[in-house]
Length: 358
Image (cartoon, rainbow, N blue to C red; front, side):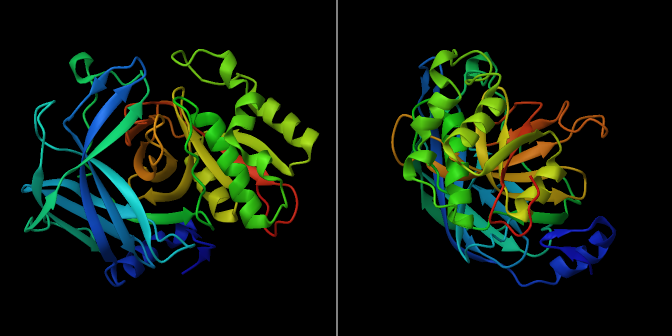
Protein backbone atom coordinates (compact mmCIF):
# COMPACT_ATOMS: atom_id res chain seq x y z
CA UNK A 1 0.00 0.00 0.00
CA UNK A 2 1.42 3.34 -1.07
CA UNK A 3 1.07 6.19 1.39
CA UNK A 4 1.97 9.84 1.01
CA UNK A 5 2.66 11.03 4.56
CA UNK A 6 -0.85 10.35 5.81
CA UNK A 7 -2.66 11.42 2.63
CA UNK A 8 -3.03 8.15 0.73
CA UNK A 9 -2.61 8.04 -3.02
CA UNK A 10 -5.87 7.43 -4.91
CA UNK A 11 -4.79 4.17 -6.62
CA UNK A 12 -4.26 2.59 -3.20
CA UNK A 13 -7.61 3.48 -1.68
CA UNK A 14 -9.27 0.09 -2.06
CA UNK A 15 -6.38 -1.49 -0.20
CA UNK A 16 -6.68 1.16 2.50
CA UNK A 17 -10.31 0.28 3.16
CA UNK A 18 -9.31 -3.24 4.19
CA UNK A 19 -6.46 -1.94 6.33
CA UNK A 20 -8.72 0.46 8.20
CA UNK A 21 -11.47 -2.08 8.83
CA UNK A 22 -9.01 -4.52 10.38
CA UNK A 23 -7.78 -1.97 12.93
CA UNK A 24 -8.61 -2.18 16.60
CA UNK A 25 -11.48 -0.15 18.02
CA UNK A 26 -10.62 3.28 19.32
CA UNK A 27 -11.05 4.21 22.95
CA UNK A 28 -13.81 6.52 24.15
CA UNK A 29 -12.64 8.33 27.26
CA UNK A 30 -15.84 10.32 27.78
CA UNK A 31 -18.98 11.66 26.12
CA UNK A 32 -20.79 14.77 27.39
CA UNK A 33 -24.21 15.88 26.13
CA UNK A 34 -25.19 19.56 25.87
CA UNK A 35 -28.26 21.61 24.95
CA UNK A 36 -27.33 24.70 22.98
CA UNK A 37 -28.45 28.30 23.56
CA UNK A 38 -28.07 30.18 20.26
CA UNK A 39 -27.07 33.84 20.19
CA UNK A 40 -27.51 35.49 16.80
CA UNK A 41 -25.72 38.48 15.32
CA UNK A 42 -28.74 40.72 15.85
CA UNK A 43 -28.77 39.98 19.59
CA UNK A 44 -31.57 37.41 19.46
CA UNK A 45 -31.01 34.76 22.13
CA UNK A 46 -32.73 31.41 21.75
CA UNK A 47 -32.53 29.64 25.12
CA UNK A 48 -32.83 25.85 25.14
CA UNK A 49 -32.85 25.32 21.39
CA UNK A 50 -33.61 22.00 19.71
CA UNK A 51 -29.90 21.65 18.93
CA UNK A 52 -27.70 19.36 20.94
CA UNK A 53 -23.98 18.81 20.93
CA UNK A 54 -21.94 15.80 21.98
CA UNK A 55 -18.41 16.32 23.28
CA UNK A 56 -16.33 13.24 22.53
CA UNK A 57 -12.91 12.67 24.10
CA UNK A 58 -11.21 9.75 22.42
CA UNK A 59 -7.94 8.13 21.50
CA UNK A 60 -7.06 6.23 18.31
CA UNK A 61 -4.13 5.54 16.04
CA UNK A 62 -6.30 4.83 12.99
CA UNK A 63 -9.46 6.17 11.38
CA UNK A 64 -12.47 5.21 13.51
CA UNK A 65 -16.22 5.76 13.11
CA UNK A 66 -18.25 7.49 15.82
CA UNK A 67 -21.87 6.57 16.46
CA UNK A 68 -24.21 8.11 19.02
CA UNK A 69 -27.73 7.20 20.07
CA UNK A 70 -29.74 9.60 22.25
CA UNK A 71 -33.07 8.48 23.70
CA UNK A 72 -33.14 5.59 21.19
CA UNK A 73 -32.60 7.89 18.19
CA UNK A 74 -29.44 7.26 16.12
CA UNK A 75 -28.33 10.90 15.93
CA UNK A 76 -24.68 10.61 14.83
CA UNK A 77 -24.02 7.87 12.28
CA UNK A 78 -20.63 6.63 11.16
CA UNK A 79 -18.80 9.94 11.32
CA UNK A 80 -15.07 9.20 11.00
CA UNK A 81 -12.73 10.83 13.49
CA UNK A 82 -9.15 11.87 12.85
CA UNK A 83 -6.24 10.08 14.54
CA UNK A 84 -4.56 13.36 15.45
CA UNK A 85 -0.82 12.87 15.03
CA UNK A 86 0.15 15.24 17.83
CA UNK A 87 -1.71 13.50 20.66
CA UNK A 88 -3.09 10.14 21.73
CA UNK A 89 -6.18 11.91 23.12
CA UNK A 90 -8.36 14.63 21.59
CA UNK A 91 -11.75 16.21 22.22
CA UNK A 92 -14.13 17.09 19.38
CA UNK A 93 -17.75 18.26 19.27
CA UNK A 94 -20.60 16.94 17.10
CA UNK A 95 -23.95 18.66 16.55
CA UNK A 96 -27.22 16.71 16.47
CA UNK A 97 -30.98 17.34 16.78
CA UNK A 98 -32.30 16.83 20.31
CA UNK A 99 -35.77 16.07 19.01
CA UNK A 100 -37.58 18.56 21.25
CA UNK A 101 -39.47 21.79 20.65
CA UNK A 102 -37.54 25.06 20.77
CA UNK A 103 -37.45 26.42 24.32
CA UNK A 104 -38.02 23.09 26.03
CA UNK A 105 -35.34 22.33 28.59
CA UNK A 106 -33.77 18.86 28.52
CA UNK A 107 -32.29 17.84 31.88
CA UNK A 108 -31.11 14.32 31.13
CA UNK A 109 -30.99 11.79 28.29
CA UNK A 110 -30.25 8.15 27.82
CA UNK A 111 -27.43 7.59 25.37
CA UNK A 112 -25.02 5.10 23.91
CA UNK A 113 -21.79 5.72 21.99
CA UNK A 114 -19.36 3.61 20.01
CA UNK A 115 -16.07 4.09 18.19
CA UNK A 116 -15.26 1.30 15.76
CA UNK A 117 -13.00 0.49 12.84
CA UNK A 118 -15.92 -0.51 10.59
CA UNK A 119 -19.14 1.23 9.58
CA UNK A 120 -21.88 0.29 12.03
CA UNK A 121 -25.16 -1.14 10.77
CA UNK A 122 -27.00 -0.48 14.01
CA UNK A 123 -27.14 2.25 16.61
CA UNK A 124 -25.33 1.67 19.90
CA UNK A 125 -27.58 0.75 22.81
CA UNK A 126 -28.69 3.84 24.74
CA UNK A 127 -28.19 2.26 28.15
CA UNK A 128 -26.29 5.09 29.88
CA UNK A 129 -27.73 8.26 31.40
CA UNK A 130 -26.19 11.72 31.03
CA UNK A 131 -27.08 15.00 32.69
CA UNK A 132 -27.42 17.61 29.93
CA UNK A 133 -25.22 20.68 30.32
CA UNK A 134 -25.96 24.19 29.03
CA UNK A 135 -23.87 25.60 26.21
CA UNK A 136 -24.04 28.99 24.48
CA UNK A 137 -22.94 29.47 20.89
CA UNK A 138 -22.74 32.66 18.82
CA UNK A 139 -23.85 32.21 15.22
CA UNK A 140 -23.76 34.53 12.20
CA UNK A 141 -26.91 36.33 11.10
CA UNK A 142 -26.99 34.36 7.84
CA UNK A 143 -28.30 31.51 10.01
CA UNK A 144 -31.78 32.71 10.89
CA UNK A 145 -33.57 31.91 14.15
CA UNK A 146 -35.89 28.88 13.93
CA UNK A 147 -39.01 30.99 13.34
CA UNK A 148 -37.37 32.38 10.20
CA UNK A 149 -36.13 29.11 8.80
CA UNK A 150 -33.21 27.83 10.88
CA UNK A 151 -31.67 25.03 8.80
CA UNK A 152 -32.02 21.54 10.21
CA UNK A 153 -28.94 19.86 11.61
CA UNK A 154 -27.92 17.02 9.30
CA UNK A 155 -27.28 13.50 10.54
CA UNK A 156 -24.51 11.54 8.90
CA UNK A 157 -26.54 8.52 7.76
CA UNK A 158 -25.54 7.50 4.24
CA UNK A 159 -23.99 4.08 3.80
CA UNK A 160 -20.66 3.58 2.13
CA UNK A 161 -19.09 6.62 3.71
CA UNK A 162 -15.70 4.98 3.92
CA UNK A 163 -12.77 7.19 4.95
CA UNK A 164 -10.22 7.09 2.14
CA UNK A 165 -7.58 9.57 3.24
CA UNK A 166 -6.86 11.88 6.15
CA UNK A 167 -4.54 14.62 7.36
CA UNK A 168 -4.16 16.53 10.62
CA UNK A 169 -2.19 19.30 12.29
CA UNK A 170 1.22 18.33 13.64
CA UNK A 171 0.85 20.18 16.93
CA UNK A 172 -2.13 21.17 19.08
CA UNK A 173 -3.75 24.35 17.77
CA UNK A 174 -3.85 27.55 19.79
CA UNK A 175 -7.45 28.76 19.70
CA UNK A 176 -7.95 32.42 20.62
CA UNK A 177 -10.85 33.65 22.73
CA UNK A 178 -11.98 36.62 20.67
CA UNK A 179 -14.61 39.33 20.39
CA UNK A 180 -17.90 38.70 18.61
CA UNK A 181 -17.42 38.41 14.83
CA UNK A 182 -13.62 38.57 15.17
CA UNK A 183 -13.21 35.05 13.78
CA UNK A 184 -11.02 36.15 10.85
CA UNK A 185 -8.26 37.99 12.76
CA UNK A 186 -8.36 35.24 15.41
CA UNK A 187 -7.90 32.52 12.79
CA UNK A 188 -5.02 34.40 11.15
CA UNK A 189 -3.31 35.00 14.48
CA UNK A 190 -3.73 31.37 15.51
CA UNK A 191 -2.27 30.22 12.19
CA UNK A 192 0.87 32.29 12.74
CA UNK A 193 1.14 30.93 16.30
CA UNK A 194 0.80 27.36 15.03
CA UNK A 195 3.52 27.78 12.41
CA UNK A 196 5.75 29.52 14.95
CA UNK A 197 5.35 26.59 17.35
CA UNK A 198 5.87 23.98 14.65
CA UNK A 199 8.87 25.51 12.88
CA UNK A 200 10.43 27.59 15.66
CA UNK A 201 10.16 30.82 13.70
CA UNK A 202 11.22 32.81 16.80
CA UNK A 203 8.40 35.32 16.45
CA UNK A 204 7.50 37.84 19.12
CA UNK A 205 4.14 37.14 20.87
CA UNK A 206 2.56 40.31 19.51
CA UNK A 207 3.02 38.95 16.00
CA UNK A 208 0.31 36.35 16.65
CA UNK A 209 -2.06 38.44 18.78
CA UNK A 210 -5.54 38.49 17.25
CA UNK A 211 -6.07 42.21 17.92
CA UNK A 212 -2.94 43.01 15.88
CA UNK A 213 -4.34 41.01 12.97
CA UNK A 214 -7.67 42.78 13.34
CA UNK A 215 -5.84 45.98 12.40
CA UNK A 216 -3.98 44.30 9.53
CA UNK A 217 -7.15 43.08 7.83
CA UNK A 218 -9.04 46.29 8.76
CA UNK A 219 -11.65 44.41 10.76
CA UNK A 220 -13.17 47.55 12.33
CA UNK A 221 -13.79 49.20 8.95
CA UNK A 222 -16.35 46.74 7.65
CA UNK A 223 -19.95 46.05 8.77
CA UNK A 224 -20.23 42.84 10.77
CA UNK A 225 -23.56 41.80 9.28
CA UNK A 226 -22.82 42.24 5.58
CA UNK A 227 -20.58 39.76 3.79
CA UNK A 228 -16.99 39.34 4.89
CA UNK A 229 -15.95 40.96 8.16
CA UNK A 230 -12.57 41.96 6.72
CA UNK A 231 -11.07 43.89 3.83
CA UNK A 232 -11.63 42.38 0.35
CA UNK A 233 -7.87 42.82 -0.19
CA UNK A 234 -6.99 40.88 2.97
CA UNK A 235 -4.70 38.37 1.22
CA UNK A 236 -2.49 41.13 -0.19
CA UNK A 237 -2.69 42.99 3.13
CA UNK A 238 -1.53 39.89 5.02
CA UNK A 239 1.38 39.20 2.69
CA UNK A 240 2.49 42.84 2.75
CA UNK A 241 2.35 42.97 6.55
CA UNK A 242 4.29 39.73 6.95
CA UNK A 243 6.98 41.10 4.64
CA UNK A 244 7.02 44.42 6.49
CA UNK A 245 7.53 43.01 10.01
CA UNK A 246 9.57 39.95 9.08
CA UNK A 247 7.09 37.10 9.49
CA UNK A 248 8.35 34.37 7.10
CA UNK A 249 4.88 33.18 6.04
CA UNK A 250 3.06 33.53 2.75
CA UNK A 251 -0.64 33.14 1.99
CA UNK A 252 -2.74 31.77 -0.86
CA UNK A 253 -6.38 30.76 -1.33
CA UNK A 254 -7.72 27.56 -2.88
CA UNK A 255 -11.25 26.25 -3.37
CA UNK A 256 -10.12 22.64 -3.67
CA UNK A 257 -10.46 20.65 -0.39
CA UNK A 258 -8.09 17.94 -1.68
CA UNK A 259 -5.43 20.61 -2.25
CA UNK A 260 -6.03 21.96 1.26
CA UNK A 261 -5.78 18.48 2.79
CA UNK A 262 -2.45 17.80 1.09
CA UNK A 263 -1.06 21.10 2.38
CA UNK A 264 -2.31 20.31 5.89
CA UNK A 265 -0.41 17.02 5.75
CA UNK A 266 2.72 18.83 4.50
CA UNK A 267 2.72 20.87 7.69
CA UNK A 268 1.13 24.08 6.44
CA UNK A 269 -1.66 25.81 8.29
CA UNK A 270 -5.11 25.64 6.67
CA UNK A 271 -8.19 27.72 7.42
CA UNK A 272 -11.68 27.31 5.96
CA UNK A 273 -13.83 30.34 5.30
CA UNK A 274 -17.17 31.49 3.91
CA UNK A 275 -18.80 34.89 3.66
CA UNK A 276 -19.72 34.70 7.35
CA UNK A 277 -17.11 32.67 9.22
CA UNK A 278 -13.52 31.45 9.06
CA UNK A 279 -11.69 28.97 11.29
CA UNK A 280 -8.51 26.93 11.50
CA UNK A 281 -8.68 23.40 10.14
CA UNK A 282 -7.23 20.82 12.52
CA UNK A 283 -8.08 17.68 10.57
CA UNK A 284 -9.60 16.53 7.26
CA UNK A 285 -10.95 13.19 6.03
CA UNK A 286 -11.80 12.38 2.40
CA UNK A 287 -14.83 10.09 2.00
CA UNK A 288 -15.56 7.57 -0.74
CA UNK A 289 -18.61 9.51 -1.96
CA UNK A 290 -16.61 12.70 -2.56
CA UNK A 291 -17.50 14.52 0.66
CA UNK A 292 -15.03 15.62 3.30
CA UNK A 293 -15.25 15.59 7.08
CA UNK A 294 -13.49 18.74 8.29
CA UNK A 295 -12.61 19.44 11.92
CA UNK A 296 -12.37 23.17 12.65
CA UNK A 297 -10.77 24.84 15.69
CA UNK A 298 -12.47 28.11 16.70
CA UNK A 299 -14.14 30.16 19.42
CA UNK A 300 -17.80 29.16 19.49
CA UNK A 301 -18.87 31.63 22.21
CA UNK A 302 -17.34 34.93 21.21
CA UNK A 303 -18.79 36.95 24.08
CA UNK A 304 -17.38 34.86 26.90
CA UNK A 305 -14.15 33.01 27.63
CA UNK A 306 -14.05 29.24 27.42
CA UNK A 307 -15.88 28.69 24.13
CA UNK A 308 -12.94 27.32 22.16
CA UNK A 309 -13.70 23.98 20.51
CA UNK A 310 -12.77 21.58 17.74
CA UNK A 311 -16.00 20.82 15.86
CA UNK A 312 -17.02 18.60 12.97
CA UNK A 313 -18.22 20.03 9.63
CA UNK A 314 -19.35 18.05 6.57
CA UNK A 315 -18.26 19.44 3.17
CA UNK A 316 -20.55 18.46 0.27
CA UNK A 317 -18.98 19.19 -3.14
CA UNK A 318 -20.79 21.20 -5.78
CA UNK A 319 -22.23 19.81 -9.01
CA UNK A 320 -19.19 20.50 -11.23
CA UNK A 321 -15.98 18.67 -10.25
CA UNK A 322 -13.97 21.00 -12.49
CA UNK A 323 -14.92 23.96 -10.27
CA UNK A 324 -14.06 22.93 -6.69
CA UNK A 325 -15.91 24.94 -4.08
CA UNK A 326 -18.56 26.35 -6.41
CA UNK A 327 -21.91 25.24 -5.08
CA UNK A 328 -20.30 23.26 -2.26
CA UNK A 329 -22.30 23.23 0.98
CA UNK A 330 -21.35 22.87 4.64
CA UNK A 331 -23.27 21.08 7.40
CA UNK A 332 -22.54 20.66 11.08
CA UNK A 333 -21.07 23.28 13.42
CA UNK A 334 -23.49 26.19 13.76
CA UNK A 335 -21.07 28.86 12.49
CA UNK A 336 -20.79 26.98 9.16
CA UNK A 337 -24.09 25.07 8.95
CA UNK A 338 -26.05 25.91 5.80
CA UNK A 339 -23.31 28.03 4.21
CA UNK A 340 -22.03 27.55 0.66
CA UNK A 341 -19.04 28.19 -1.59
CA UNK A 342 -16.32 27.70 1.05
CA UNK A 343 -12.68 28.49 0.40
CA UNK A 344 -9.43 27.45 2.07
CA UNK A 345 -6.53 29.65 3.15
CA UNK A 346 -3.07 28.09 3.00
CA UNK A 347 -0.44 29.63 5.29
CA UNK A 348 3.02 28.46 4.29
CA UNK A 349 6.36 29.19 6.02
CA UNK A 350 9.04 30.41 3.67
CA UNK A 351 11.94 29.20 5.84
CA UNK A 352 12.84 26.34 8.20
CA UNK A 353 10.57 23.73 6.59
CA UNK A 354 11.64 20.46 5.05
CA UNK A 355 8.54 19.86 2.90
CA UNK A 356 7.24 23.19 1.72
CA UNK A 357 4.05 23.42 -0.23
CA UNK A 358 2.14 26.66 0.18
